[in-house]
Image (cartoon, rainbow, N blue to C red; front, side, top):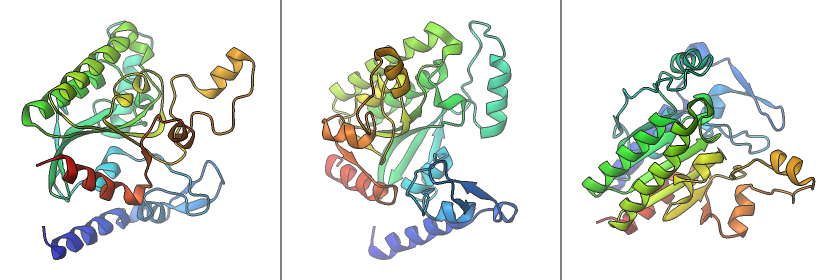
Amino acid sequence: MNIDDIFSQRKRRWNKLISVRKSTESQERECPRCKHSTPVRMLAANHWICGECNYYFSMTPKDRLELVCDDDSFKELYAKLKSSDPLHFPEYEKKLESCRRKTGQQDAVVTGICKIADKRAAIAVLDSRFLMGSMGTVVGEKIVRLTEYAGKKKLPLIIFSASGGARMQEGLFSLMQMAKTGAAIEKYKEAGGLFISCLTNPTTGGVSASFASLGDIILAEPDALICFAGPRVIEQTIGQKLPEGFQRAEFLLEHGMVDRIVERGELRDVLARILAMHTK
């Protein structure tokens, strides 16, 4: 890829990020941290980061893929898999249908293959809009299938985690996905596969305790909450105040739990460099 192609791709990507429908150009989003309201088009142009306090808004899988993938290179896999209601949990089917209408997806993860700086990779992005990105049977199955596909095709694997943990509406069927995804990831790594785990806010519960923590390289977004049980649960259990910033990405970096904290604007370039070093 020559320098003209690189600049051309970046120009098209920039135009995608700042182009929103006219009906939404006047809409604003309030920052949960500083309460400053920013037009949606400005947030999109700034990678969904508050310009006042640098708060990171959650990103949809579509926005995330546009941020890191080469233009028009993403091809979705396993899009039609849908969760059932194995426990007949009250209101679960209604919630699933509501999330499907809201997100346009069948479940809480989008999986597929893409190119990043012309390097092929398998990629998955969890969606916090779909039952808080919780891991049920379909999320686990899609992660496993993508991992096995990456192993067969000898592709690096990248997973963006954003999750509240295992999906309680599926009980043990959900908890089984922790062992299932972990086993698939370990088998893939033993065969020489490269797994890059990208932790976003929040990455908690069964996801943090399974595949999200198994990366050969673990990246995190600034100030992301990364934990098994949240700080309020721990404080109520032990009756003590936790250290400032406990379970945030910066705290975990200091204690060797993540390898690097990466700003969104740098993420594509960091991934491209890693892939260039580790792939032929």
